[in-house]
Image (cartoon, rainbow, N blue to C red; front, top):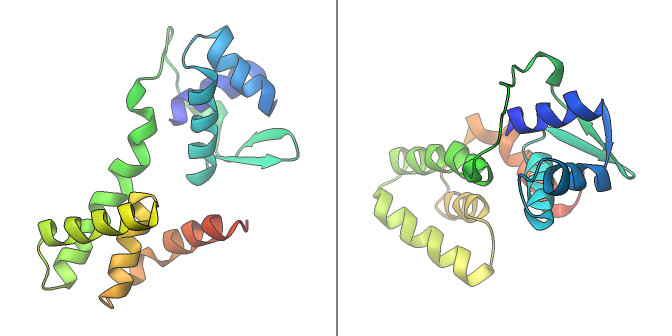
Length: 153
């Protein structure tokens, strides 16, 4: 995801309007549909890679020093990066700190996700909380997720 964002900022400059962000990906580069480009923007905000102020998108990482190869085109898996990143780590940590197997945890996570219509990471955090499983080393990330859920920055 960082390469895709770096490519956009290297091409467009340090500030991009939301409209230009979506247009660049969907029309200029033909990477994604406009809906997928919006999802990329949302995902990048969730991962704290970009900040949105009014109608401007600003990079929250050193995009100038990201090496983007000629002819770069992001894969569709770009939308799964967060789930690949934090979810397995949370699952393993909960299994390690509880008497539950990974399958039992997944069952509980899936049930919460379906019942509450929430993201898998959020459901996993709720399961950990429900079983009083400490995740001290994850507090910063948990706090970031919590602020986003509450709509605070």
